[in-house]
Structures are given as C-alpha cells and as structure tokens.
Length: 339
Image (cartoon, rainbow, N blue to C red; front, top):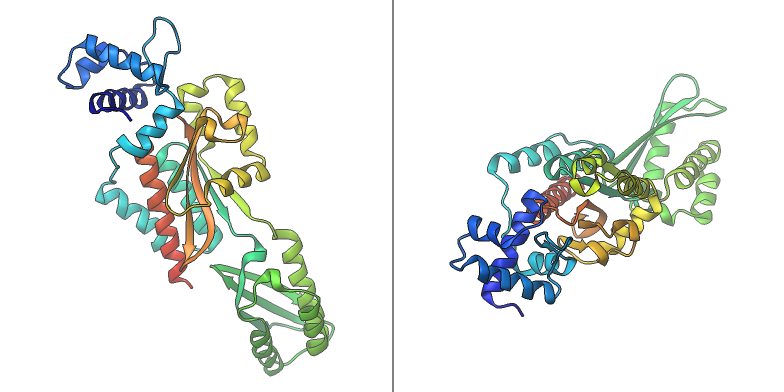
C-alpha cells in the first residue's frame, strides 16, 4: 500500500493531468499543491510511484502521466466525489422526469444529457422488444374495416398500428374483443409469445386474431434485440488523445458496431451501482486508450437497461461517475413512476 505522502503526490499528479493533458513534473506539483515538501522530495516520490507502476514517463525528458494502475487506485481510493450544483441537478431531473416522454424519447434525452454533462460519448441500451411486458391492449373501430390497435408495453412503450379486416365490426364487438385480448395478454412478456398463444388468438378471434398475430410477429422479428443509442461522438475529437485521426477513426468505427457495444456495456454492468473500466481492463484493443463508466437503470427492482460514458483514460472520473449516477437514477425514477 502507498503511504500518505505518495497518495498525496499521486492524487496531485492525476488531478493536474486530468485538467491539463500535459505530463506533470515535480516543480509543477510543488508550485500548485501545498504538500509541505520540496520539489526534490516530490521527484523522489514520483520515481518510486513510477517504479511500482502507478505512473509512467512518456518521454525521457518529460514529466509523468498516470498509468491504468494509477487511475484505478485514484478512482477506488483517492478521488474526491463530485457534487452537481442544485441548478444542474434540478435541470436533469426536470428534463428527464418533467417531460413524461415515451421510453424511446426518454432514452434519447438521457443520452443527450449525459453527453452534455460529461463532454464525452454517452451510450444507453434500451430493452429489446422481447423483454417488454403487455400492460394494456386496446382496439378502436374506425371507418369501414379499419381498426386502430394500441399496445401499451412495460416499461413505457406505446405502439399504435392501423389494421384492416375483410368484414366490418361494430364498436361493441371491438370493445368485447379488447376486453378478451387484455385478459389473455396482460402480464405476458413479449418473448413468451409462441405458437400456443398465437394459435389460441387465431382460434378465438378469427380474422382479427390472424391480423393481430401477424402484427405481433412483425414486432418480434423487427425489434427483438436490445437497441443502443449514442450521443456526443463528436466530443471525442475535442480530446488531445484523439487528435490522431486514425485513433479517433478506429474508436468511432467501433462505436458503430452494435454487437461490440452491447458486449462492452453488458460486461461492464453485471454489478450494481456505478462501475468503471479503465484502459487495458477493457477486453477490446480499440478501447485500451479509453475508460468506460456505466450504471444500470431500473423499473422498480428490475434492471431494464444500461447507460454509460466512454472517454479517454484522462477523463474527469468524479464528474463522469456523478453524471452517470444522476442520469441513471432519474431515468429509473421516471420508468418506475410510469409502471
């Protein structure tokens, strides 16, 4: 373990490097941080920290920069938690909770706010169609043989579809059909729909049943998998670490691969609370210059998705972790209230 002086020196170096993106020398630490020791003493401590793997020296004549090990110790032990101002906190709460949006729009809004708060790339994983639960289904007879189908799915999904039938149905018949279908489908998870339920719907409700089954199958085939929403990709280009065009291009191309993103986010979110994966802790080579901060969001006690931030390892961990926690909690509150 590091003694108190080494902890102070390491924290000062990382704080300075996060702020300036420039390698940090002993004189800078002595001038900007009142550690009560000389520049020479700080230099010796820096040499020890480098030898034990907490710092690295990018060039012979340069100062030091944190290693992944140094960042990990900083995040786990040294970092001072960030607190958003009451105005920032209220703004996030109002924009996510106040609008009472659909799940999809709420997720877009969460991604936008997270990118804005962190000036990094934000990602939000939405639950796939097969994870949704039927809450309410309503049929409304329109003109001629047109019927409006409204499916309310938990959490927070509303889908409207217009279907047409061969024969006309009265408003009373449609109301009775709605009641019967609700009794059959309420509380059923979309992934649990199968041949047995489909056969029952077709057998019990004839032509409308056939059209509804086709509609349900379209939902399963078209939107079954989890969706990933990203925002703020341009922010990575403002970071000094990604001035190298090839490095930036490799990361942005990786962000376009849905399966890659899902594997990264799902691995990182197996634990509760805000999680941090730093540099080479990421399994994918293209992420070795980045850190990933994630949290799950909930409906009640049930996890329904993941959100996170990707940025350089030199990110402001305290602020990013606070932002991820704030947005995930706000989104969870919104979805739970809509339950």
